Image 1 (cartoon, one colour):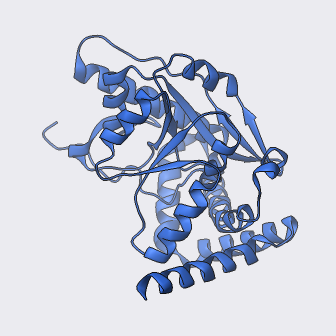
Image 2 (image 1 turned 60 degrees about the vertical axis):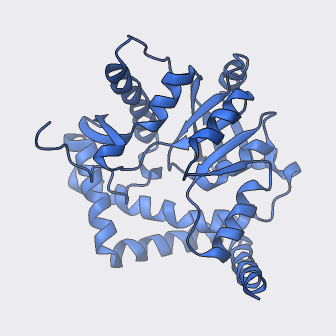
Image 3 (image 1 turned 180 degrees about the vertical axis):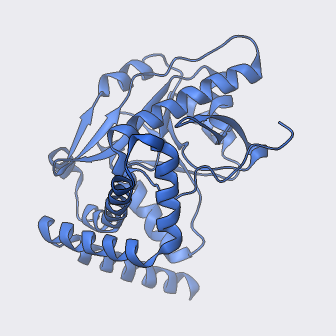
Length: 298
């Protein structure tokens, strides 16, 4: 009975998403912008986080009015994500090349040619949920590390949504062994690296000129395996979606593990910072990236 109810609720949520996703493009843009503006006006907590983050990141580069305008546009961009998920549920694999452009795919081919697998460095940029479409466009198996949702009907829906074009999912808890096996098979593993973590789980490295606690797991895996690291981000650009694959990030290997961890993780943060600077309204500014403070005894 519980399974039946979960399927029913999941189906109703999918129906609602398809409904909002069926709106014509210009209407979807206007509605999502209105919702974003309303969210910006009433959600003081996230508005404050976003504006504080923007001030911290851009310091003297932007005037207060520019910071506020960028924060408001960010809320509009985030509101679009729900509509885009609904819209993408209507797509077939043959539709993908019409809507999604791949940029820098040669970097992916070169990385897989090394026969070690590929670590895809990503972030909550643009329409990041639509990165799940990418395995339908490239000739490689890719796994995504994710945290299962607490609400079973929504978890059921999103597992189906994320895997329908070939993406494989690995639950975050106990993921290391599965990740290493996938890489050994010359497959890809995508991991977002733009969220705050506890001090014991991360390393403090530069991000927009300030020390930021960044997960150390990604760096350790790259250092242990020598797997090439390729950045990938899904960006909204001129009415289309662009998947940007960056150049392979060279691996630092000095023989000093801690030093190498800092150097490599700093390089990963720089890649993320670079794409944010290109598309500043499209990052997840409502997340408190600088939440974890450097320990007083450091």
